[in-house]
Length: 439
Image (tube, rainbow, N blue to C red; front, side):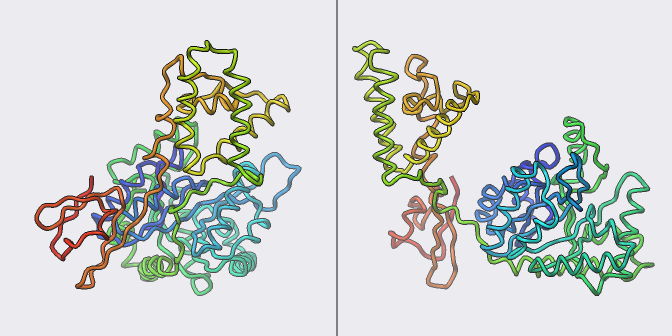
């Protein structure tokens, strides 16, 4: 399945990544693909959940594309496409495409701009696509396919066994599949992707409820859940005997999900922090320089002298976590943003959430809340468990079996000895009979 829309597709998809992975694992699947609309927000959660369960994660995104973009028009004619990351270059391109959609063009990307960033990406032509819009115009459709194939590493046509509640929509959907089979099957390969917005059939009302909260008008269905291959074929069972090519296309499309998954070499690296460096020669020196200024500005003469040791002890405690974990740039970037806003009359708030527990943030004018009088804890904002990067551990036994753990897992060895996975490489007690349990 490559059509997962999880909880990160706000007010449309549902279900935590861990739940989608749990069902996929139960069904005996080996790979899973996500394609939330105009967001890559679930990428790390999705990748982590898949890795922990031994599934290959396929990162994708359903994007909104403006056809014949005209910057003078307030409303653009838009369609959808699905993009899946094949390699590192594709990941970089999809990140940039997502940035253009969410920052530069406010909800879409112009088609011509999209074609510049197709390397390393597989394109899937979905139901609400420009191709289906021009499907009756053979020359225009073929021209569009050539443009897709020139821009993207791989191109597929989506076969979705969805059943719409409205007869008119369902007939149009089936008609498009029929036209694809009759006219374009040899020009672009099918891929069977069922867009799934909830885990099980019984949760079908979730999508409708979420859509109504935001006032969306979305086509109603009752079968956009995580289907097995068998359920996929059975969805259109009543037509398969009479329309033999439909059965062939669905099965070929299922095979091509495996082809696409096997082409994916990209692995999202979460082994190191991706915070950018503050662009000065020595961020740490700059951090302490601005912190000293902040202490003079916000504390000296502003609080009772008898309380000063307590404040300095708190700053020292916070710095013992901030500095060794390379977070000076993080605080400086926020300090710089706040300075810019204030110099340019951009309104800022006093602070929100757990950052108000940081005295360093207060001294740097990132927040306007002194945490000491309110007994706010810095550890709610940053603590060792929150900022240390989890590492994956691979162990190969003498019999050739390969084991995959995370350092926050515990392992029970033969004889009942319990150790952290991070210490696996330092023990001689591993054999083929040990039992893994997860904390």
